[in-house]
Amino acid sequence: LGKDKNYVSSIMMEQLRPYQRDCVERSLDCWRKGKKRQVVSLPVGSGKTFIMAHLIQQMRLDPTNLFAGKNPKKRKYLILAHRQELLDQAFQTIKRVNPELVLDMDQGTNHWD
Image (tube, rainbow, N blue to C red):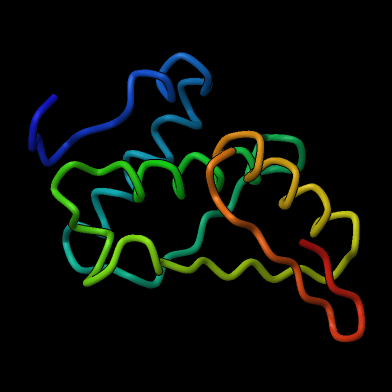
């Protein structure tokens, strides 16, 4: 796929539903246009965590390195949630989609690696 600015991994394309793929593509497109602060609003059960995990994957794999900044290996993503179940779900989903990532969860006195 080279340095195509609209690069989206073919692996991701097979796993996401069409509306999820559209959400990832639109978010990446907005990022390319300089819109760094974004909000995704979807109904319960529509796969927001799965979309987020794939968005992280695409930002890491982008051949243009647009999302990587100065050092792609030090890129960090912050996930905030108000419930432990949502943190656990995010941790497991991101790890499943991005097994090579080093994940760390910190919740005050609780800490997971």
